[in-house]
Amino acid sequence: MARRRARSAKRSLSSAEPPTPAGTPPVGPVPIDTGTVEVVPDPDHSRRVTLQVNGVPSSYLDLDDPGFLAFEYMQQMDAVVAATTTGPLRALHLGAAGCALARSWDAQRPGSRQLAVDVDARLVTLVREWFGLPRAPRLRLRADDAARAVATAAPASYDVVVRDVFAGDTTPTHLITGQAAAHAAAALRPGGLYLVNCADRPPLEHARRELATLAAAFGPDVAGSGRLALIAEPGILKGRRYGNLVLAAVRAVTDEADRDDSTRPPSPAAGEPPRGDGPQAPDLRSAALARALRALPVPAQPVTGAELTRFIGTARPY
Image (cartoon, rainbow, N blue to C red; front, side, top):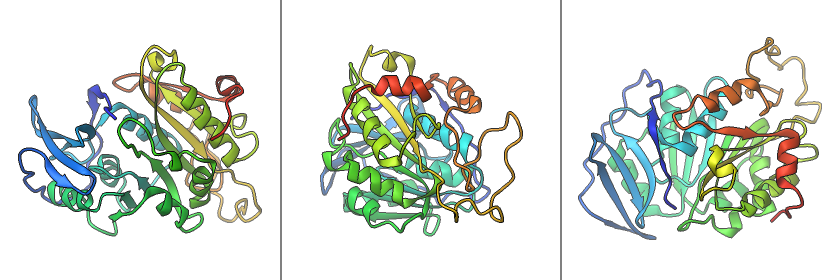
């Protein structure tokens, strides 16, 4: 699906380790397993490119700045992670394309270990060559079906799981089921974060059903406890146009092992953002997250708590 690019894109901190030199992508479409891929230069920036998969803009990268993020939904996901976690990340990306988000987190958070999965094996090979992506163990690339990859992930092995998989303008149906959401929750450590790129149009019925599905998979009172959020630009939330919404769900901290005081970090001071890198689950209702989303080049807003429960209404889980 076509994903709008922010009017003023974010520049992130760069890693102390220089990026691997990028190759020179060919001009024009290149055959891949699922169709074609093409690298289209930005006419306004000689070192910025859009990766188009089957004619659809799927990633936008600055070849000289690995921390750069341009797509608005990726900026929103990055803001959620920045407000709820600290330190290196263990992240699973379902849907690799050009690995823009994984590349940015590698630059921002040295020591991170990430896996990006894409169903197209030829595409995985080409983006590694063209964009000088970080090598394993920093960023591993795997050709696999996203649902299978998350279903077979080791339990509690990731801080963040990102779902960004499209066939045309829709996510394949086997990735929006309750079973897929439950597998994502199981792959997360307690307090870990599931981020979903959801494309929808008025009246946002698909987004409501996806949220109902996440609520069922991530446990009781997920909205009331601040572990579920909907994030988007106000115009999309008001049903004025088609666009991308970010859905965020946090795995609960429930059992005694998760609550072990010997491993629990100090609680945040008043006014500090909640931390997602310990047994205490982050609260997506935090004022810090709301401020960070409003400060984006294209401001976004979170819908949480009782407002989110009203938004979901009587929508049925998938």
